[in-house]
Length: 199
Image (tube, rainbow, N blue to C red; front, side, top):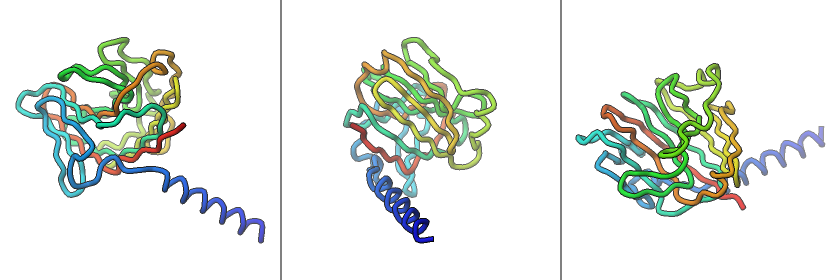
């Protein structure tokens, strides 16, 4: 019994340390630390970050001011209207033409958790159709993205969606960004955007 108690104590201690090692990228009040690209709407409401199509109905991005290479990123999102969005990693941008890799956030059946290379090779990997059922279309979802050297792994609501090893991604550098797809009618809510940088 004593050994079980000691094990539980260390597991609790380890979990607390892991949680403490994540830092928040979104303060829940404003867009400090982020940069808007394009004319689409990015604003804060009730502690949540909202992205919404504007009158131009074009692509829009909200990027971190800082670049990140190896990291774990945890985000929560809720789809409203047409929730075609995504999380870009190791990216750069000119105007609203982004270079980098997108971990997809999209309506049911549209490959949430898959990886797409914008203005490049297109889809690099998509989740299995049965795994896409993990997406909650009407409530909050939690996505975890692990980026380590030339590998990306994504999880949606605790389920591993994809694992990708790619030399080109390994050579990439740049910021993290959230996306609004073009076409209009899009609205997505975000919260608890947290990152843990890795060596």
